[in-house]
Length: 220
Image (cartoon, rainbow, N blue to C red; front, top):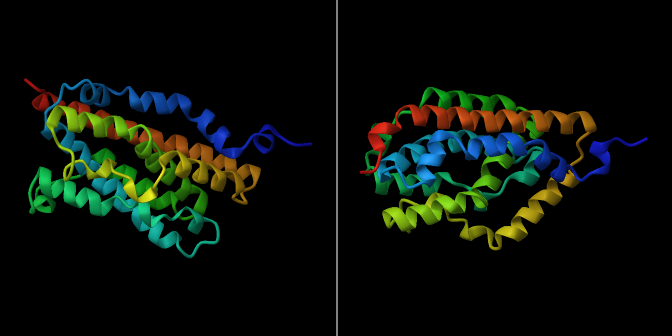
């Protein structure tokens, strides 16, 4: 007898299981204000700063996963965001940006969770999937916003440029195939779904703390 998790491709189960929390993240107060054009460029910069610390944790985990028999399949150098975020923050804040930025408490908690969860390949993939596939797809809305509202199309917006992966739809299909073919048991797949839900909640917590301080970044 097979279960639903075994009958349905895992990539579809993962997506359907996280739709609710995904929608919650996309409609947070901070994201609504940003996408509504209500914030200054400095208001967007606060998000880019938090992403630097989050992706630092994820990409350090990627480096460790290179030798993992399962996790190594999900290590893509063409996805790396830290070099792009460094250039963005150089443009948005200045070359001395590392001395001027501080991660929010929710960001520190998020990075800590990434490091803890990435002790096994499934936990790593849960956080990797949540961030990168979201940025490849939905993140392009923010890329267009930055270009239109702030007239930033190069440095300052490179985080959302994924030229190195070629066709975004083809890459997403490739990623879903990897999810479907990875040799996880039913219990491991359930754990990955649970950790992906945690990853979305971590993002929501960061957005909530950004919202707490966004009044000073309201556009005139």
